[in-house]
Length: 156
Image (cartoon, rainbow, N blue to C red; front, side):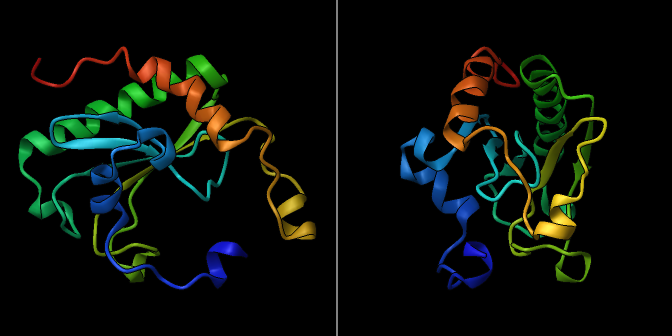
């Protein structure tokens, strides 16, 4: 409800958060050359990550091949880290491009990685109009950050 009721902020979170400097507060787990990985502040599941290019654009056509390659590299490494740290059994991975496809922030393309477990969909979203998160955002951040610190930047 906090997300639904809040006023839309000026600016772009995918442009502003990397400039803020405090990665833990901004939930940025990893900064690559062309893209970065951050946690979703309103996660669908524990460990819900987003990969965003630094380049502000709304579709894949405006991204160069190097950026697209780095996004796929980060998606692969992110899923490996989530398997290792959270025992994720599966993933939803993709982007909602433009409002008609469900993009909440349509002006800056970003890709979601949602870890999944057998039986993780239950009655709570339907009956209780809520989703149970078993671990806090910052606790999850601290656990994941150690693994993202071990990644080499693409091209290094």
